[in-house]
Image 1: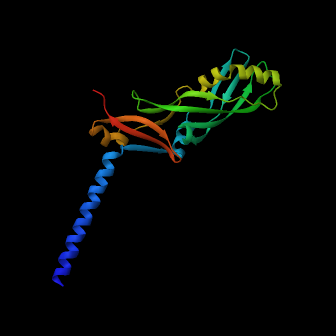
Image 2: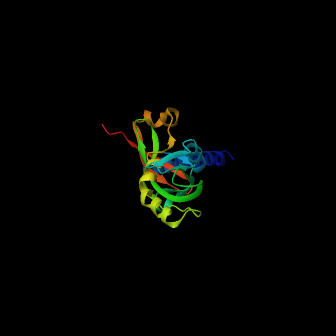
Image 3: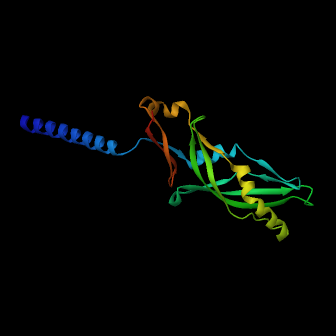
Amino acid sequence: MLHRRRFLSTATRTMALGGVVLLAGRGAQSQPSYTVPLAQLQEMVGQKFPRSVPVQGLLDLTVQAPRLRLLPEVNRLGAVMAVDAAGPALRRSHAGSFDVEFALRYEASDRSLRAHQIRLGPLDFPTLKPAVTELLNAYGPVLAEQALREVTLHQLRPQDTAVFDGLGLQPGPITVTAKGLTVAFVRQQP
């Protein structure tokens, strides 16, 4: 009975040590990271809208908060944007929408994740004449850039990165996953 207990005790310690070595080996191969879920991104970006974009004194476009979607296959975010067009050139307000895709970048000055490399789909205004919609689409890329340029999607707080900072790590590549954004931490550059 005593031999059996010693054997079990030794076997348990050996398995535990093997598990630690296995985890350490996995840890050495993987980068530390920070994950931001889609719901948190949606909440943060919602605070930045609505935004008004004037179009050469003719009309104003009011862009509402986007409905974000994750596009992990291209490492980007997509959004459906509701937009209202009104102003002297139009007799009434017209509701429309457009799709947009964008990449993300990290801005060290305020520890934020921001939209950049914006790709705009065509603006769609069902109640506007096609010629007016064509005119708006001609200005579309500039309008999207004005409305979305450098929109902050998330801001890292010091407590979010304190452990990484202490290890000499800084935010690096941002990856879009099926659950949200993953920010990898890499060695700080001297």
